[in-house]
Image (tube, rainbow, N blue to C red; front, side):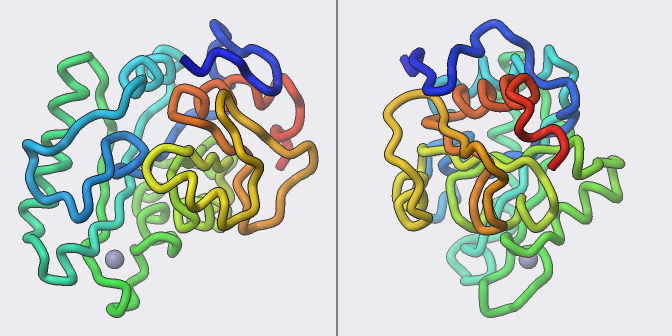
Length: 220
Ligand SMILES: [Zn+2]
């Protein structure tokens, strides 16, 4: 249990109400990362995801998923399989009364140069158009540098989680090693860095809950 937080305890405090919408990467962030997941039966929620999402819903947040699925563009699996995995994820969450407002995926390979593959912000633009999201009230949580870049370029409060590929990507970015809770720099980070690194989704939500109290992120 990651109950020791480096920047103090946010347990029991509801998330920052200024964050109305939270975007999540899928593989390695909400569910176990399986290389080119194509079988809905293999969709497995990561530990602690359900209570973390429920906490956000209780605070009035809307939840969204933005996922790169280049396996489609590379010809490894069909677009239908990718959607079926999203549908399975929605079912697993709905069984716990967790409802995601919208899920988007980019089916293109990197070579296609599309506008929607993270770190490009096409999926953010689409969600903003469909659901009226505002960058100042939106956060992005993911396990890869591309998630960080996507969130930062879009102007979102951005958290790198250490599940999935997170530890490798945190090391790439030169972020501190972390065994529990979350860490956030005391000054606004450069554009290629997250606002915080968190051991898992629960710790990421702790950060979102604590951010405004610490006064660091409100005016970014
Ligand atoms: Zn795309």
